[in-house]
Image 1 (tube, helix red, strand yellow):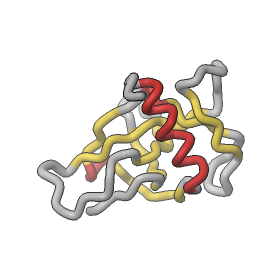
Image 2 (cartoon, one colour; image 1 turned 90 degrees about the vertical axis):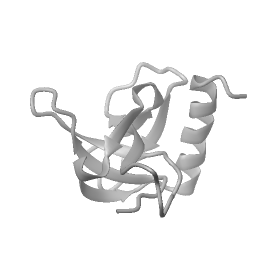
Image 3 (spheres, rainbow, N blue to C red; image 1 turned 120 degrees about the vertical axis):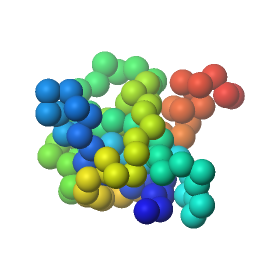
Length: 106
């Protein structure tokens, strides 16, 4: 399986059976050393912090949502259950900027 930045998958996080949409952030790699994707959870609640990027109400999400870059997780490819959509390039750029902030890479 090859994932691409901006793809959104349903992932079972194992927390009381909670299945959550997560956005792939890791680069596209046809030969990764491990079958992992770095992902950020998508949530409908925001605390108004620079770690959360509003992405609107995409047609594959139930309501206005936010990408939470503080919640980064490495997810095994076999845990990416169902691809439900893609985040636009504009929103992906905003999420990358939030990552730079969160990781103090600027």
